[in-house]
Length: 115
Image (cartoon, helix red, strand yellow):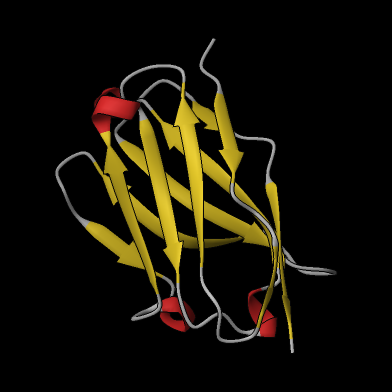
């Protein structure tokens, strides 16, 4: 059973930075896709950033230039570096992975950005 455990969520002021971590129970190279999603208050869950095994990365338009997704296979961990945070970035952030067979989700970590 694959486990994804997110950490790093916190309360931060507008303009601040946070780094979220997603620790996987096996090598991140074993996944076809890893991504970060978020769900804000009263909103649908939305895709924030994607990293595919071939090396490509994609970002939601609203976070381009501010967020960066990257991985460290030695630590079986994927990160989301978030800079220039805005109140509208407030959400529960979820780690996601897919290995051609099924989808996996973490439990989420809360990010709150105060104005």
